[in-house]
Length: 78
Image (cartoon, rainbow, N blue to C red; front, side):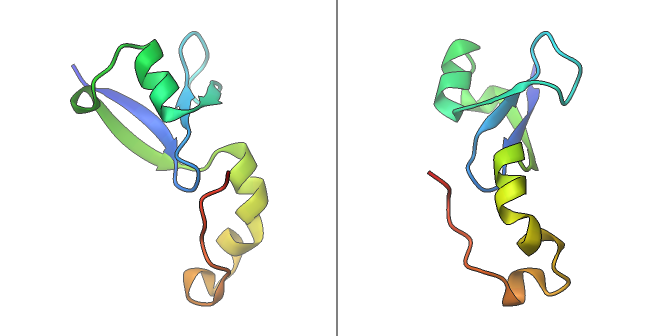
């Protein structure tokens, strides 16, 4: 059985919705999440979204009508 996991497009953290309403989970490091849940990469499908930190950081870029063609360079956040 494959799980669908939300992953941030910028920092690649994943949201762990275990024990919460969908969308209400905590954002965690990918390797930590996979190890905690004892998942193999082939058991997971990713749904890309933005974590709250990256959404706040990149909000102007994401809402700009010119977006990726005129916006700042996309870099992974630390």
